[in-house]
View (tube, one colour):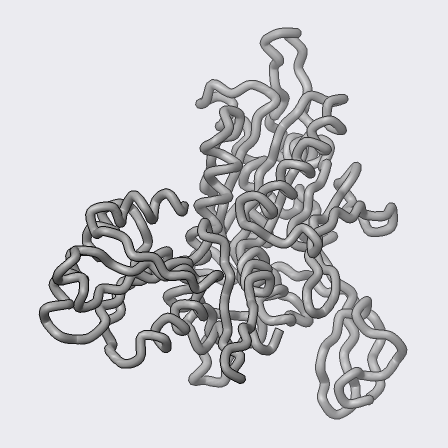
Length: 430
């Protein structure tokens, strides 16, 4: 993990938030390559969960909602973690279920009694800060989709079974954030609520487990040997869940949740119907029956997918006694797909290199231009570190044969290609 964290800062993937002021635990900024990688992951998720299906629609709800939403959903009462505070020298707070014994893991001081700590960030709406203005930063995007369920039904031509998908920021005041961006206090979620007829939930639950696992292996190229499905035991299921399964990845710190798939029954719609007094039932046009649909929910954080991709792709080659880093990102996710490099800074090479760059951009490829000069091998290695699958080099022979060299990241093989065929050759590799 330490090597990946160092790479993230060195190459502009992830930075500690507010670093010049000492940083804030559990908060991170994304640099230029991190932003692009996140965007690629979001776009790939949306394409496969929404665009390529005919039964899922999108939604974008607010971070701040009516506080009664969180009362109805159970978050005000139940969204808590057990907390123990060190009463010795360091005064650090720990999740009670993450420590053993009665001594502080950091300073060895005694730990206080267990108390429950609500993970929601509280704020106020309007100029007066009193109990009537209390609001919360959402701890999940799901509730917005349940609250807008009737609006979607009434405005769209959707029929059960169908889904509502959303991407957006969520906030959890974690007691002990850690493992870099694995557990943080501000993060981006991608969730989908798939509404089904009661009694058909088990079939759809299995469908979405298979569908989501396949997305990681086939679309992102994650190593199948490092992924597994783990069903929740009775004692760890959420209060709303009939069944829950995690897609787990073998992280350096052990197996950890990458994505959760839950069968939420009709818990949320029923809770909001009862609390709001509004009818949220669905009228089945075929049976003329009214019912509250049950829900299957695949939910994942973009940050966890990102760290999984980086860990899975991180590799070190052995070249002449050195161990340069290679980030073997899947071509779908790489922040830069093609790097264009003139062999030198001389003007006669820069013109053709710029022409190649423009043609690749117009073809829709994510391209970076590097005319820093110096050793071409070092420039290749820099691109290897950020995961660029292909480099295109313009050299002095280009002026005569109108051809360029494509260098492939993983094999390091190089092939000479006419400029006129370059776009087709690269697109064929994608």
